[in-house]
Structure formats: structure tokens, C-alpha cells
Length: 333
Image (tube, rainbow, N blue to C red; front, side):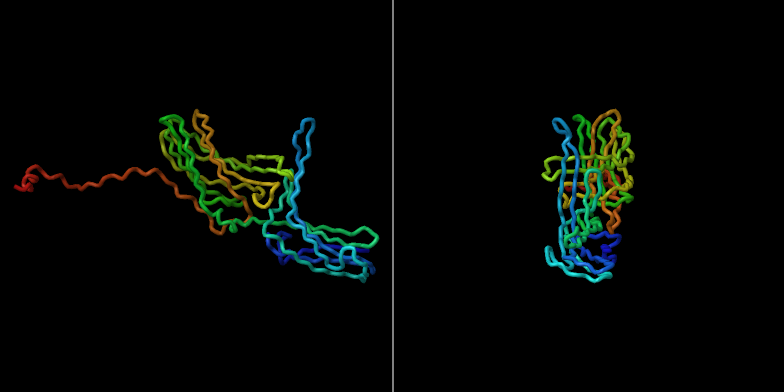
């Protein structure tokens, strides 16, 4: 009897989770009940994304598929391909291996119309018989928000809408950064400069997930837009100004996947929408954000609220102005 198993090194990972650029280490264990002949033992470290979706053709739906390979490394632990067979004694044989993962790998993802997967496959080549194969999956997470400096920059978006020559609404939205994790509180500041005759009843805040699947040629796509969560904040009266401070909790969703994968993208947006009384203004401010798993070391603070400043007032002394007689005495002759 012959059994084969793969164990990944627990010292280098947690639950077989690795980061791009990390060295993947492991051991292949081969157990033989009696002596056997083999040509070789190899491992393959493999990573790919696959998509599968239907589009409507002229007569019937047409299946679209996408494949993208990121990692395909083969290592022989003993023997070689199509080499001579040699005998192994009975007992347990252990073979260690290591493989440097590339720096640019997308996250492991499993979605409705596609996935991104990684695995280690061991192949025991048996002469004149079927080879014995075994696979062990592992996961790649590049989800540390601290690795991207641009996510730490504060966000400020301004939307000016003119309703007529004398009516307008200026909406300013501020976030302390653009990178967050699930269950994190996002402090949002919204400033309204409402120069219209319509009140803003409330402010709608929507967390939107956009997923896109593509075929290999990038010629066909399947897009999904999910309104994951919604909350409300205060509005402002007509012909008035107001600074609105509110907190928004990030729901539990899969992390963003916007880099290194050409056929699957997962993006998130915060939609800020003022709801005006009696006016269908259709004002929306879209703020793209990134969702990871490891939060920023610096806790995001709420942006400072602000108000339109009034023009500076002149400063006057408390003294009374000089009398006519005093002025006449000061007048030179």
C-alpha cells in the first residue's frame, strides 16, 4: 500500500494563509507498506483565476469562460520526468520543499461566477501504472492596509448643483482615509451650503459592492451591483448651512480585489445622497474605498467640521469721536 500527503510548514503560515513574496515551505510524506519502484516525485505550486458566466446570444445563451494563471512552478523532489525507475524501501519517506511566491498575486476569492485559487500538488510517477496525485490548497491574502500609503490620505469630495440662477446646493463630504476593514467605524463629515428653497430631509449613505467577471479575451463581462447596507444622517433646512457628523459601520464583506487580476474585480463605494424635499435632484457623491483585513496602525480620526466664516468685523475704540471745539483747537493757523 502506498500513501502520500502534503503538509505546509506551520511556522511560516497561519491556517495555510500566505502573503505575496513569502516563502512557502512544506513536506511531502510518502509511506510504503513494501518496497516499490518509482520514476520520480514532483510538486507543483499553482495559482489561477477562473470565470464562467452566460451571455445572451441571438438564439440561445452562450457560455463565456476566463482563465488567468499567476503561478506555475514545478519541482522534482527525486527522480526526473521520463527517467529510469528505481526502488524505494518500505517505510516512511519525507521530502521537504520550498517555493518563493511572487510579489504580485491577487487575493484568494470564491464568488458566484469565478474564483481565485492556489494549491500545492504532489505527483508520484509510477512506471506502467497510473500516477498517484494529491492536492492541498493554500490561501493568499494581500490585505494589509498599511502597505499602501495612498489609502492613508484624507478624502474630500465637493458637489455643486445649480437649480436656477438664484438657487444652488454645495455638498462637501470628508473621510479621514480610504482604507477600512469589516466592522470598522467610518467617521464621515458632510457640510451643506444650501442656497435653495428646498430643505434636505435627510442624508442617505449606501455601501455598494460592484463585482465584474470577464472572459479571457476581456471582450465580454458579467457585472453585479449589490447595495449591501444603508444608513441615514441629518439634513439641513432651506437657505441654511450645516455640518453633519455621522458614523458608518463597514459590513462583513469579501476584501477588495482591484489589482493583479484581469478577469475578476471586487470594488466598494460609499454613496452619499442628500434627499431634497419635493425635488428630484439625483445628487450622489461616490467615494471609492478599499476593504482589507489588517487595519491601519493609525486609527482614523474624524475630519474637523467646518462652517463658512463670516467676513471679519472692523474693530473700533470705545472712545467718543472728538468734538467740534477740540478739532478747531487742533487746527493750525
